[in-house]
Image (cartoon, rainbow, N blue to C red; front, top):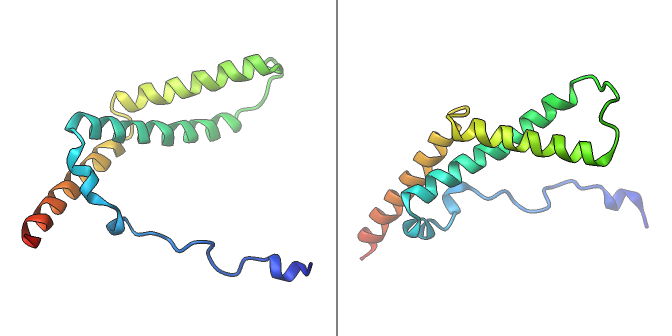
Length: 114
C-alpha cells in the first residue's frame, strides 16, 4: 500500500458546532445536575492540568512500582475533584451558565415554533 494514501489531508469528521447540539435534552436536567456536570468537567480538566504539572516534577526514584503510581494517580484525581468542588478555576460557572442559557434558548425556540 502506498504510504502517501495513508496521510490525512482533511479532518476525519467535520467539527460539530455547539449550536448543533440537541438542546431539547437540556430541558429535563435539574439545576443541581447541571452544576454537578459543570464541576465534573472542570475536575477532569484540572486532573489533566495537574497530571501535566506532575510530569514536570523530577522523579526521585521512590515511586517505581505500579501500586504507588496508581495511588499517586488517585491522589491527583481527588485533589483535582476537591479543587473543582471548592471553586476551582471558576470555569464551572461559565459551563453552568452556558447550559442554563441553552435551556432558555431552546424553550423560547419551542414556543416560537408552536
